[in-house]
Image (cartoon, rainbow, N blue to C red; front, side, top):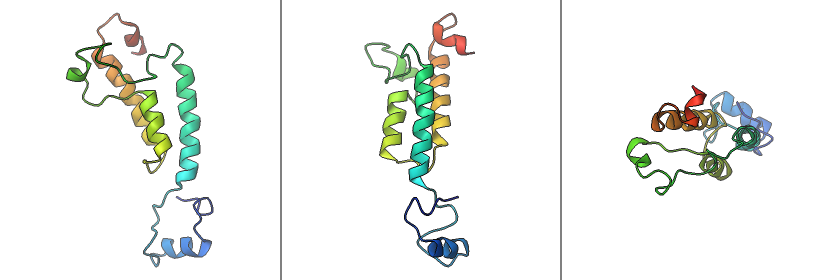
Length: 120
């Protein structure tokens, strides 16, 4: 899908892209402007849920010396916001994956009885 007006694409160009006549665009062109807005809205809601800031920033070596030995794909809300602001992703759906990665990492790294495991 595309909001061609948001991205400055003419209606004629979009129509040609849908017909396969425009080599610059294709049917899967995504509106990064709207994706950013929606992603930021979702990110703000996730940030509100992290009332104690457990997931606000990357886990440091000082906080958890073995974290990087166990967690191969670290993710936190601060890193997710940076990716969102850099607009490197084609749509806002990747944010769901980032959130799931945050939860998975917390459950994998922390032992039973820790506060993070209450997410189970």
